[in-house]
View 1 (cartoon, rainbow, N blue to C red):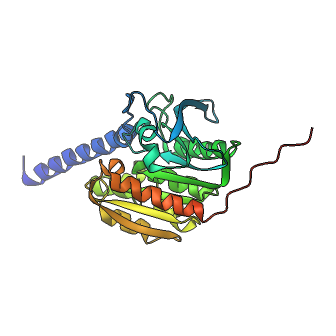
View 2 (cartoon, one colour):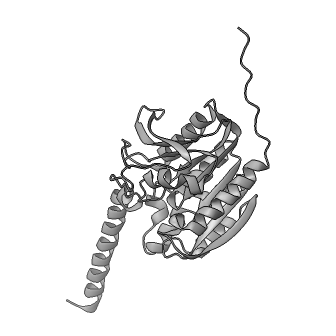
View 3 (cartoon, rainbow, N blue to C red):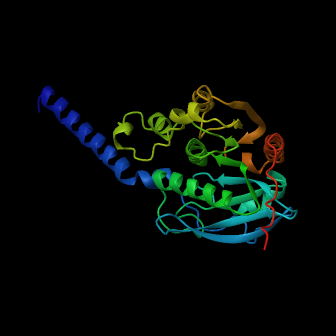
Length: 288
């Protein structure tokens, strides 16, 4: 075989390998992006500062979504938080830690489709739609002050929180290890693959950051090999209402939400934000 034929053969083999890699990523992108955890992180979650109960809600298409509702023991109406977890996160730990993270606040932590006891298959469109439904459901509850409802998103969930905050009148936003977009992170990892042509679940938070009208608190890990700080920088640069962008000492991408320092920072931020908004008065009972 002459040299030109060898080069052509090598190029053909490389092309087939490249095409196979693109096809593999396109076909398995859901498995690459989402890592549903079925087993509870905390078997019997209870918040020391709340009444805690397991709850099942139905998505707009009827899919069963399961998680926990934590309600302060004192009289309402209460400020409230909707929590969105990370790529591999089952959210029962939030019910355990809610007393420290969200003192005096009602908390709704529901597992994504396919995670924990929730049914269905995860995907960006459903996550955002479900997130808006959860926000609306929480705001409709009698003992909730609908003017004081925040969203908190960790890692993958930061992309859900940003899009819910774009669509709903959230009072404040907390983003833990957020990114500019999953598309950008995927392009960084798969440099030789045309990711933009095959990736369906893009979570492009950077496109929506300027549309957020609520004060936004960003918490970064001191060491993060999942979401490099450069990708958080791009997101923060677009934010219209950035309250603070802070690095938590001694943290990494996995341990950051569990650290006492992180939990205290989130509690202080939300407590101050809710205190700055006058709570709604309790409804007077109607005359008989």
